Length: 282
Ligand code: SF4
View: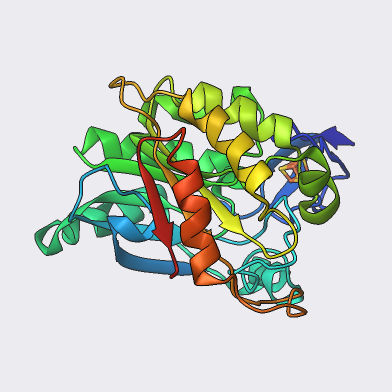
């Protein structure tokens, strides 16, 4: 049995089996990425869609995703590639791209405004080896690297990729331990530690998806934004916060979309502590 070092779950994995996230396996008693270079999604997106509001505004970025996820958010917007039955089938069907091939694609899209590569759509860090190898090559070619992550990884894993990552959008999905643990299958502490370390080396922006009846109280948003308000990026600027609107998806269809007025109201509350607050999906 191999013990996975990537996230708080520290799965014990038998050779050839998959860890909880479906993206890692074990070979000769050592865990490795099972989704290395296995591509399920590829698109040239506006950087604002990551979302990043204060990093290379107006540019595009080649955005790439694989399969698997170490959380179990019932409202996942990308469940087809993250943790549904279909997601785990991508182990057999996903296309393959080497780091060299992906960097070449990114270079070829530079004339269309591309600044680099964004690792996104599913949770990239369960396959951190591909992120590390590709972003290193991309950096050598003068490209920017962006990570869009749930922040649920050990700091040693962040340390492996941090030298090559220019910007990150990290989910801070709520500000209660029970919300992270019981609804998402996550660890708020691990995410907060990750964010505090990430801001030391990369431009970081945070995203909070507002779920009606779960994390949408004034008190929770005030607590969350007070913590965010103390964070600073490497240039000394405050860390931006994106407050986004939920739509019923996947296993959470028992309630409607977040009321738009309430999203704007919570964003106004967040502005009491955070300088840059953006509203999304409204
Ligand atoms: S990254 Fe995947 S295999 Fe590793 S501990 Fe987390 S859930 Fe388990």
